[in-house]
Image 1 (tube, each protein chain N blue to C red):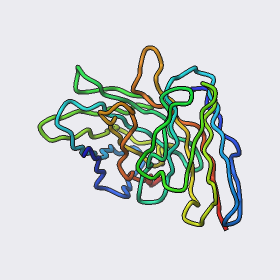
Image 2 (tube, each protein chain N blue to C red):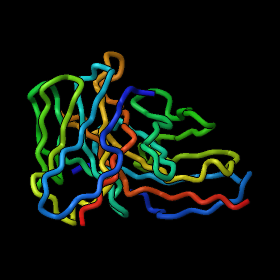
Image 3 (cartoon, helix red, strand yellow):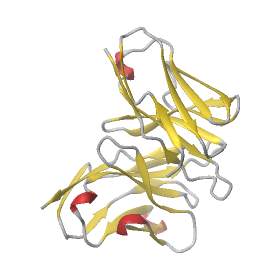
Image 4 (cartoon, rainbow over the protein chains, first blue to last red):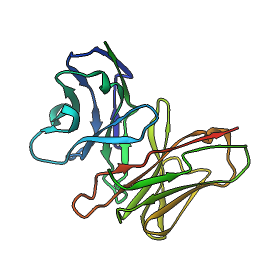
Length: 114
Length: 114
């Protein structure tokens, strides 16, 4: 069965430092992958997605992610974190059945030190 | 932002009472989904719909039913609420003409069952 793992429950970085959030998936073929961000009390906002093509994808708010098939990973990066980036981040993969449902990782909460 | 609204946004109810949550979209998307979000679990699919009157179960469907009588509305009903159904409920839509797989989320409904 397809699954998504986000190994880091919490990550703390200093403002201005770089960020990498890890995501690993299990799926035999090329997956459709997403990163969403959720601020406290809010819904989920799409940051970026990967379907095919260039393995480095750019998203909103200065985020990027790199798809690495050999490592079954889709890590999210940002070169310089802002205090407003503090939120919870979810990686997800589309189920390859007729539902197109999303299978989510358990999320990584990002804390930003001033 | 995708035109998705959820009502109510907050609800407190007692064990054993019926509860209905509403999701309304203005995007004319084919697919609609109900997820629940609980700490440590990310989001898990309850039910989804792939068209008017066409629905199917997700991974945590026990105790929930859904209905979709119009393209724009997807209702989630807890027939007899239990404390284990205390959660945040998110509606999502997908199936836009240019991008079938990307899901867009509503703002969520916070439900407390006492």
